[in-house]
Amino acid sequence: MDRLQSLRVFVAVADAESFAGGARALGISAPSATRGVGDLEAALGTRLFTRTTRQVRLSEAGRAYLEDVRDILAHLQAADDAASGAAARPVGTLRITCPQEFGRLHVAPLITDFLDAHDGISAEIIMVDRVVNLVEEGFDVAVRIGPLPSSDLTAVKVGEVRRVICGSTGYLAEHGIPTDPSDLLKHRLVASRIDAAAPQWRFGADETCVLKITPRLTVSSVAASLDIARKGWGLTRALSYQIVQDIENGSLQIVLAQHEPAVLPVHLVHVDGRRAAAKVRAFLDFAAPRLRRIADSS
Image 1 (tube, rainbow, N blue to C red):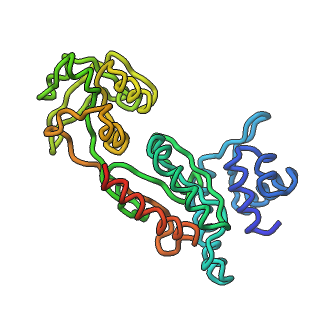
Image 2 (image 1 turned 135 degrees about the horizontal axis):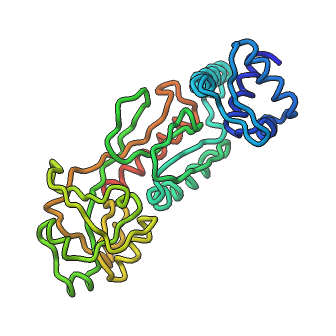
């Protein structure tokens, strides 16, 4: 097996955490995958995986090597596409990661229109409320809400969202409208799992007002906390894009607007800058204007 194919096998086995799974992904036999990784380890003089009868895990050297190999293969694919002319036509599988609610409300409806416009592309959307490492986990594009740390990633800003406190008009009529963040301590508060990890809500443009909350109820998703707030049980915290329709139809009302913390930027993030594959460039061109309209409306 040549060195390039061995690198592809190494990545496939690392992703699958299995020689058999990696082999299936590449359409080769399990012995071939084992031999390819063995050849690579022999050439490098180090173990890339630790193996037991039940598990295959990257070694410390393997974890460091994986990121470099992904980068090499991505640049080689970009060079091949440019040379063959494939870069002019978007093809392949586009892997996107985004926050759960943003994905459900906005990315999923958007991606179906994108696929209708590009019949050579298929897509996979992974909706998780954590920061995903695009290189290590093999994603093409991420939607990130919040300040971005310094990195080698390329970011396209598509808008801003607000952090808001909201409740139903019925609840507020019965329990009163808070006029100061400290008034929230007198109310029934519903927190999502993210809030529960650090039960502090910040207020003010400089976020120096920090309120330690004791929620009466904690749920595992923002969607659930908003459903409870709509039914008039208590107040909850959300991002402005999540309640646009609720504000329009009057099912929820924002309170303490004058005390809101600084807005959060929304970016589309990808790895390869100007050398990004055609499928990535096509998605950015398609998605950015639509997401900007969504952000503007919230």
